Image (cartoon, rainbow, N blue to C red; front, side, top):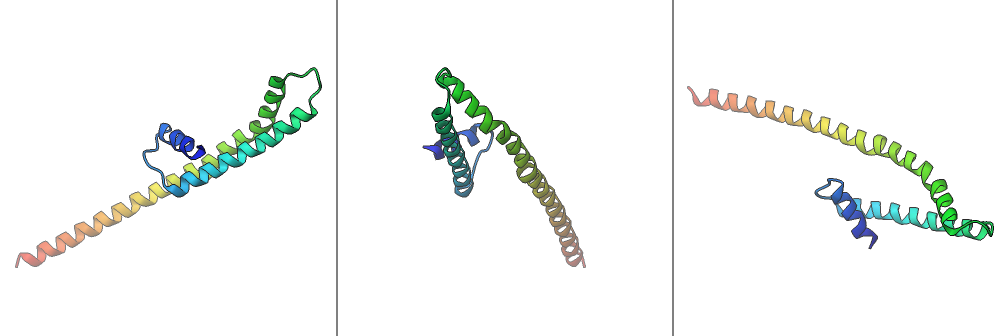
Length: 116
């Protein structure tokens, strides 16, 4: 079920394709975060004062567990995903330019060989 949800989120985020490994990795991350959140919520519910509502306990758990994670997730996105993707894109363009220049030079050589 989580795998389908992760696939839907990635599709709606603009990714047309994803490897099985990447979907499994994202699914593992989501499952781990859900488990941590549930453990924190259980602890919060057991320790909450009698006058505190369930909604307040949930809100406190949510703020405590995700306020830091959202920032770290953004940092992870920038450093490990976005920057790596930009680097790979740059390398791809450099390799494509190198390939095109090699292709053009081999075409020039073959044309010169055919002219005599």
